[in-house]
Image 1 (cartoon, rainbow, N blue to C red):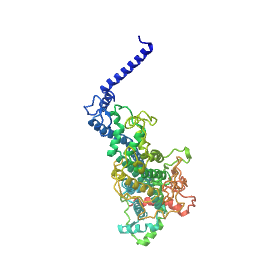
Image 2 (image 1 turned 60 degrees about the horizontal axis):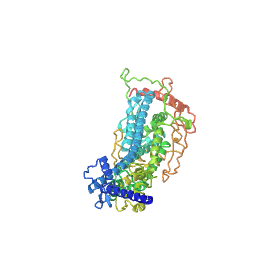
Image 3 (image 1 turned 90 degrees about the vertical axis):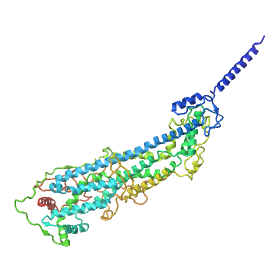
Image 4 (image 1 turned 90 degrees about the horizontal axis):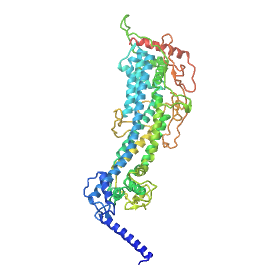
Length: 625
């Protein structure tokens, strides 16, 4: 008989024998690596491989996922390698594409706002001038229509110098007004050419052309540069959505993402550190954009600040009707002296023959002058509703600033995808490239030297990526333009940037607005000629003039001092009164409608008579033209 102790030992030995036999049966059936899980993974991935081993086989024949035992053949490894490349490409396209779309959307939104603002300004000028000047305006409306067309042409193509555009406009307006004011005379083209040569010396519109030209130049250059820069950023990012997978990157991706499938562990996610090293190695050339991208984003943000303040395009375009009307009033004030000096310089013109009584002289009805409302902004500080421009610019800033570290953060963004890697907190029980354990290597830092020591994807400094190099050049050019526009300088578009905006109008290369022939718009400005526009706090000053000279040399962006000496010179109306059927221009005492500076001199008797009587005389003479 066996003692109880002996029976207990026999039972233990028998149990161990049964366990060993079960393990042997499992191995002989090929379930040691879980090849059925590998087969299910291939089926779920819809990979066209039919010769999946039923049992694990030797892995010495594999190039990437080699090991003592495997569930993959060479054909399966090739399929998994191609799959891993597609996974990387899809992940990059998804993440980078969102940024590209966002930049493009911001550019389109700003473009849509600008075009709407121009249409509203054109309609406002047309309505105001019809009420103010009646038939005289309607006969010469194409002069003002052409001005808006030229401004929009510059915005769309950059093909004209804005100084030349404004010089041309005021020259045409000057000759038309001179002809109307001297309607008793006849003038041929030669005489009118002589009239034009005296414009700069006589300054018939006083300083309005110089001020308006400077405001338009700075604001339009900044506006076009911002839109073009957002377009450039969109193109740069969009071009880099597709990753050029190098051989070393392809091997590392396969090892990280798919070798676990060959080991029967398709559901085990790669360790987060392994994913970061692989992603940094595969995107090493993209990281070369970092510094240039930082400067570009800073440039966009700083130009947005300029457009919110001293280069506010809304404050120039919206009240352009008042500014031009003020120029016309100046000409009427000194029209007699201007005409006398021109007659002295160009010769006495011929008198026009009188028309017979009862002729076909056109009739003229004096317009019914009313108060013309102008859009302005409240002076109530933080409680004021921000203008449409400030809302659009605020949205651009909020979307662009977080993108400053985008290329630094891209590997981390990719690896935060649960489909690509395990969470950062799971440091064990993740796929480390060869087994389910922990990833032993440190995460590689940024920079060429650190990337050269990447344990997964070594960086080859001799290899160049043409797409990245081209993107760097584009960012450098865009940053230089942003800097010039920020400083109020000329912006030149050296190379065609063929693209279409959301409205189908090409935004392509041309010469930027500059300091070309014509008025020296900076030299003619006094220090207190212009007043700025407040860009923060939701308030913009009313349509006053301003002069905020940029630093111009090196203070671009970081810590540059924007002169926020803001002021309000206009109320929300311009009063057009009816005085004995007189066609009276808006005067500086009517509702505060015209900029006058800190000191408003008393109007002389002669000026008052001119303002009250001259428009009626002009309108009456105009009926005989």
